[in-house]
Length: 638
Image (tube, rainbow, N blue to C red):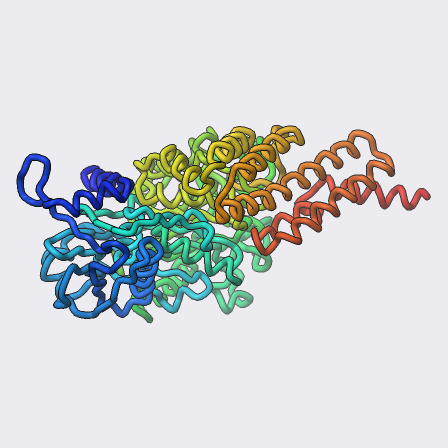
């Protein structure tokens, strides 16, 4: 893999050479400096006119879309619209995209390559540039609302090739892309084979409608994030039993009663529970051709109303008890801090999952079984997961000692792990440490990763861009990527925006005590700090000359205004808490109204619906609840 990554670096270095350097080599006699054999290269655009034909025969929607992007972006770069043909016998230079007889003839052992479903080959031969994966892309009808392709080897090859020509997709939408201008495009010699370091890579978002989401889907595809077929979700186990009322013994026995309603846990030791859940799972992947590479037996979001305390389940748990006395410790098991001891439920849950996995293996030994192993389940298993079990580690936080210690235990007992986290929930920060965190996960048996967020903010999307590249190649140079981003995206304002990001990152790094989501800014992000960040945006806007850069900076300015008003509201609330009087209460309400009104005005642009809840709902804002109660009490006195 290291050799392959060196090839990636080679082609990228060739791509960033000035156009004149590449063209000069092509316009000469073709001999190398030592006077040896001609260098193998291909000119696909010459002086703004087509010099090659794109050839594809794929019926895949994903490959057709990628081919259209290949044609469109080369035209954006050079003004030349390359023709698209379906025959590899077309005269002239050919770009062969996707699986076809001509490609299979030129690379007869392609199916033996260790590419996986998303890897690809880009290879130069005399007069032909092959751009292909083993797979051309696929959408399964069962994806439903998740909407996303999988097995995208060929589309990934196309977008990697466009990146080698200098294209970048930093953010969704046309203003988020970088397209260099080149009247002549010559592709240097290349023989590149690449596959992702994480087999499952997925970046998700709550909103699934509107133009913003459509742009996001394209952004994700162009950055080689295809659908995560290592399926996981919160599956309320009660839904697996249609006759639940007549079989209370299927459910957890808590304080002498079976807990059927709410978000119940099952009885882990009941053989009928194992039989029914195993049967449901087997039926899923036998009634239709298997699509998911992993199926799930996940618990309800938020845990359960109580874990089973029947005699057999208590035996599964064992004698060891666990306490979670601090917020940091309690967070990952979905409970508040408490010194009250709890059973080693993790043993019972994993025992049930292992039993289901054993039965499923008899039908399809290649499929994996996922569940949220490090999320809302107290304890730590002493039994090992079967090799077909893929435990999901939630809330990625290697710098948190408690989280890291728990994951290291799973690393010791598991064959492979799946990592899941929020990259921004309610509030978002630069999170440049995501690169190191992803590397840590890969080094600790990670084969799949899911990153989720709830906003399209320009800050959050930079972190997502870094994550997308690191999930493909953990050896990426993140500092180089960031420098390239600042230069490409902000032009003359690059230095100022670097200061903005680095300052924002420094002020917020390590302050997200919820592991992966935040409902309040850290104290370090005060009015003075926010004003400093604003000064960097303002300076970049003064320096900007190109219209597209001005639009990008205007977007950042609108986003940052929400942060400024947010901090103003926080400080108004802090003043009221220090001196509870009517004047301070009214000032706080005005500040809250201002921030809610403004966020509402940019809600669709940045998908900030969730952020409004921080000011409008007492469930997210304990200070608001306190203020409202105080206000009502004052009104009664009056």
